[in-house]
Amino acid sequence: MKKLLCLFIPYIIFSQNYNNWSEINSLKRPRIEHAFEVLPDGNVLVSGGGGADTVNNSCEIYNIDNNEWNYTTPMNVARSNHDMMLLNNGKVLAIGGFRETSCEIFDYESKTWTMTDSLLIERFYGQRVVKLKNGKILICGGMYSDDSTGVSVFLNNCEIYDYLSEKWTQVSPMIEKRTEHTCTLLKSGKVLVTGGYNNNFTLASCEIYDPDTDVWTKTGELLEKRTNHSAINLGNGLVFVSGGSDLGNNTHPWKNSCETYDYLTEKWTQIPPMIEERENHSTFTTYDQNKIIIVGGIVGGGTVFEKSELYDVELMFPSEEYTFPQMIILEKNILQLSNMDIMVIGGYEVSLSDDLPMAKESKKCFKFDLLTDIKTEKRINNFNLFQNYPNPFNPSTQISYQIPENEFVSLKVYNSLGEEVRTLVNNYQSSGYYNIEFDGTELSSGIYFYKLHAGKYVSVRKMLITK
Image (cartoon, rainbow, N blue to C red; front, side):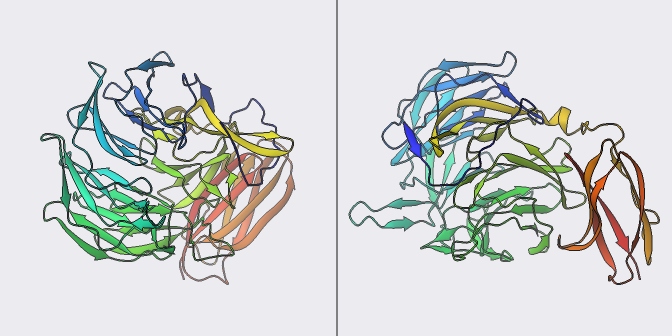
């Protein structure tokens, strides 16, 4: 099945330099709208998928040791747009799907699927699923279409699956009806829900669920209305929220803005934006939780993103980009492996036919090696952006850097909101060592960032003006 996309895609010929991404062995069959989960042995289970008229129940397992996909026992029910969660007993729960309330469990040791209790409410789009601290599974919100009226019905309904009793139980509903929101498990065991939309209104409201008391309470609102955004717990008391869109903004709904939530103070703080505008993207932390890798997403009415980027948690600033090797829509086909590597599994592959973009189901897979590529930060030895000296400073400081090749060089200074306040260099320079004086006389006290961009290399550092 081919799908014509109404979007603009520039004609790009990719080189064999995958820029830290590598293509691995392909799935046995093309898949879209499928589900996946990492098994207890580190291998990956993929199930179902397909469009509305091509839903399948086939399953495959990826062996990370020999880089091979092999078919395994199919599900009892064909599913697409479903969820899968690893349970505390090592089995995998497949949850619902498009126009499907049934659920089933995969035993990876015996390679068998067994039906279990069904969802109480049908939800086929925009629901969110999270594993609680006690191992139970919470599903909340989403939407379905009323067959009699064709009207979209938005849900605040929530259910919890107990893997010991194998039963779904209805629990207290969210305060707001939501779809395409986020659900983030906090260190306390509570769940933070942010944004989303209902009845064509994008939400800024947030709420917290306490599984011990089965109570939802309002918390601080997002600084910007967001849906189709991403949220991740950084493990340092903060939740990082990025991108998304605002359906109420008819001229430019897509966002690259970011903010953090402090769940002790229940307050949001604006931080510098991502390099690119993104919605429906994925965020993961690196092995040491010092950086966030942001992958994929779609903006601009459907433009395919071919770049991933790193966001430095310590600096709270975007640091560098990585080009993805193929024109594949990186949306809901991405997961993080047990070894922290990032894996892209199938999805829509885009090609140009008669100068029109065509999208078809793909079986291609790719991997980003975080341990090697981020830990070692592959760079030519003599590319470096040094810490400014003195630091803190008033009113001036020295910024030094060296570049390995003749490149167009940009050196800019940003404030803590990510707004550009000064351009120090913006021209071609020969390879070598450079020293620039930065005078902050006209700037107020506070934290600033300076960013060096030379060809494919990018580096960011933080400095402090004290007056």
